Length: 394
Ligand SMILES: *Cc1c(COP(=O)(O)O)cnc(C)c1O
Image (cartoon, rainbow, N blue to C red):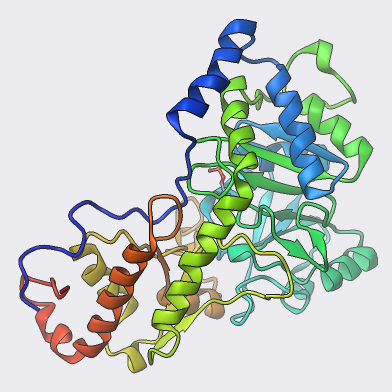
């Protein structure tokens, strides 16, 4: 402790941030300029729709501007009305997209062990006006799709999924993208498949796919099915070019992520007070996130204090998700009395550590060492928090 320079000279970002080489980027863009076809269902977007569907083994992929628009278009294609049951332990876009689509969210607590919603928590929340359940495969760990399907069969309430964390992940030996009525993905830069901004909707239902293709643009030439309301959700050729390169390199990115993920496990697995969020190794994973839970009593300092220690070392770890969506406007003032104990507990404990294109095994070692030292010095750190220096690396 008391060092004057942080563990990292430059901030170490938390997200995936996999981008193509400048050469590949230039090659892809040459074609766009040659064809002078920049948007409106160009050849690259058409190819991406096909390749994503092929990769996930699903009948249809409909690529759009971003994951949030994918959710909004999904709500319209499913013809939802009234209320939709959704977890509060998610990224704000999951819930805000429902509101943009004119729907009322009913917040559901999550299962503390899986971090996802389950049948038991959803069932008592179904109201007369409930038209759907929007599950989130948090960290790429799938919701219990079987029991949610049964619930849907019994009640007629539709199920769809926010699969932004789960591109390339398998579940019951099928790729995520095949579950519920439809699933949506984000191709944001912080996700493993990246077009900087981008997203898509996947479904095995032909009619839904036609409706989605109509909804994503205002051009009458592209009307495949009747939809009263449409939006401009068209992906550009530039986005598709990036996504196609990213899809080509997907396997390499997963391998790289897995190496970093396993190194974290090697370094941190038995640290008292720190619990790693693990995956089912009989299924394919994307290792998009390394997430752990900090138990303040056993670790010695709180998650928020650990975060401050890491930030002082230029490690951009983050509280993800924090606060829970029902504690954020526009919901916080309306849902002041709503208690979601499992969600709130998890929001106090969870921390996401850097992993991906801008990270490395040696960076993982340094981050892990900082965490181990924070644990070791926790008693001293508790006192240090009122002082100015939190640097404890080297
Ligand atoms: C990233 C993300 C979104 C939003 O996707 P955008 O492409 O940024 O609009 C929605 N839900 C979850 C769970 C996400 O991680």
